[in-house]
Image (cartoon, rainbow over all chains, first blue to last red; front, top):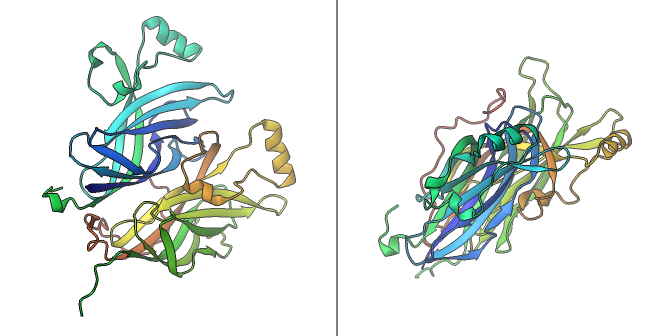
Length: 175
Length: 204
């Protein structure tokens, strides 16, 4: 079986209007993939930047997959939340990106979006906070049923991911 | 004589902790250590180090330079648990006690060649305003009991931190027998890094 190592960091996020941010992340793979070592979901620390406006998490990712097929290549998905001084959390954006498919180190910038509600909900969000959230988390990385959503752009999540492949040439796979 | 096919690969890392940018703090020293998985064993070199105390230069660059050498070799059977370097930066507060000014971590680069990495440094925040004042007064700021926590993902979801500086590192990486074991690390991503250089403002 071919093996894939995904090793890197979720560096941080920029371009969000809120400043104390954290991120819940996860990796979703198809049925042919099996996770051998590593943690597939996680949540970063909450960072309040003192210099500039980019929030830095430096959250390490170290995953070891074994795969029998190319379908279902791993996808990283994120939910970026902001936390205020009272400890209340508000959604800032959803985003996903595929893990790169060529070996080496890659800098990824993943755009995010958040659902807009009706004008009443948008007004309430501006004053009181809160706002609509997705009921099913898998809408973030799947294309089904998106036509019902009306969203606005959030900021960008920055990652540095290195990919190490093993035995791909034995199966004739070029990447 | 036929050489047996290898079962371990080697990773040799050398380089330096070059410099730092902390606009609000001065007179800093740093400590580094390596964190790695269970399949990794250091075979040569130093796993930990402490630098000298450096002050900001008087010119317009306001540079904090350590130039602290790193030299370590690991052997392993499995890339899982790839080594990370964990940096802790300390400096004096108003009363003269050494308090932590930042923690940061980054994986040792994968592909052979020369690499430059600038990493953000963050400190844990006090949970309440009273604790903030008490810790400022007593000189005992919130710090991690073991800096190696910074290299892990688990258990960080309850921590609040403040990022307040950057540290620049240079690495040269050499690997042995990774290709023979079937691993493909891709092209070297050096992009023409020219070598040690003074810090030039904040990275974007």
